[in-house]
Length: 370
Image 1 (cartoon, rainbow, N blue to C red):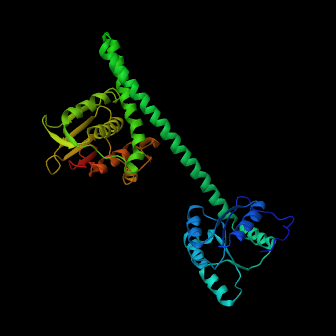
Image 2: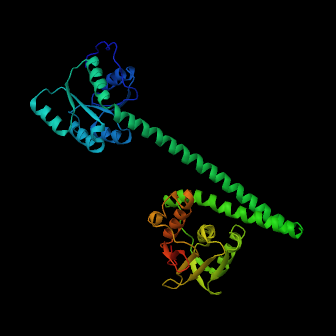
């Protein structure tokens, strides 16, 4: 490759990424230096296999590919075109100027063909011309990469904040519980402290949901299944949610006193808080929220249902109800039902929305094993 003088007043599209593939490392270095000085982001590979891997992790806008390598340049071209299609412009740069080489290169998907030795200024002109025609693809790629970086930063920052908030809430709950047991209080003070504890427990559950969703998605949470006396758990959940319920809404429990089944009590308690909170929010004035549990099929299995009186869930959101960040009633977004689904599935069970006579009923079916 000859090192001609760079062209004078040539407009170079900004942000263009060029992949240079050649088993001659000296040519790779010369090309990389010349193109980088012209304002391009350049990545290099000295064999076809490495180029294929590089093209997947760092999508190029332009690929300059030699044909004669241990892993054929034709394989690189085919792979780049298969993965990126017209979003990548391929320039073959080879020392073989015969009809067979040209035909094979263009059949593989090549967009341009130059013969070694070629001047750097000529190559820069071809790259600049290709990028002008690829400008829309380049802008889409750059916008996507910016969005991906922001999403990654946002997810990491949110996870750190949620983790710290979760720990702080746990400390606050523990200290308030200790004070409630150690300090004599009059009736008004007791009621105020009890209400604060209920609110903190609910907030702690919501933050814990946020923290654990990512862990469930990565299969990093395995439920600890053990026998549970269910009625006591249901009554405890209703007691926490009582203060937040609409005025006049009644809570009922339908579960035998001695009924026992097997699940991770900490996770299912949070599922119940999510479902009961939603039910009390959407229950009609003066209505009822019914929490029930019975055996599903095998011993140890159970069917937990949270039902509220009132209108059924609208048909237009039923199919996506258990998705992540789904928009619910009133335009609010949340991940509570998504968390419930993840917990049920981690137990080997499922959660369904059913239409009961009273109103919508969310039914969690657990097999009694994880």
